Image (cartoon, rainbow, N blue to C red; front, top):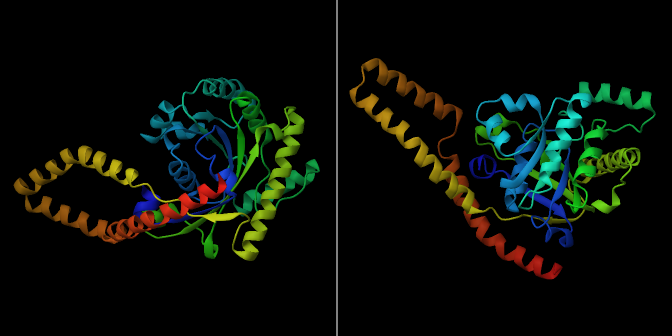
Length: 321
């Protein structure tokens, strides 16, 4: 909702049509690079377009479980939390992953194998570790942490059908920020997704670790190509926005915000001059922080794009079938 309807950010998916028709219809492990502040929003947007947002899972830092509302919501959604200390995490992570084996709906399990968001400082330290261990150096990624991925594959084997190797970038070398999205700034994300059958991932933990290192070397090549040409391999597909997400948000926002709105009306109608002055100041600050007409313009233009792009995707899926 925030990314696509408020800021109007577009997301172009690069993949092959044969894989595209399977998205949302199978369990999958999603391996996503961690370079941007809003890559989690793009990941959620990807899940929502294929109807699995409600059943998407993630391996997240334990600290996030203490964030009011978000942390509690993730807890009840069976998000897997870890402290990034494998000796303490292994038992908890394994048990949480085994619980997913009986999950009644198709789910996507997202894992950032780099463990933390890319920065130049972290990259320098990561490559020093790679050199000390005799591992190939990476240019656009941190060294992946292999134990969490290996355990995820072991616990979800025969339940998950594929690994979705996902590489995200933004056009014009933009560095998107969450504040920019909140201010209504429009970005254009490009997401490259490769579907890799889980049978191709080795069962042995050491071999699985080697496989993951090779995967990140390939991700580096894809990023290099993107910076050089501005496109990823594969067929570019713009999945249509689903108006249901907007309608759902408007319904719940109206229902939950009505009591607050009523309270404000009562305060204004019976309040003092000081109350009215504070309220006016809040409105002025809000208009400066968030452009007032942005969401209306974005919604109207994106609704028309949704209607026109649906027919194109239907033709593409028919050809793939």
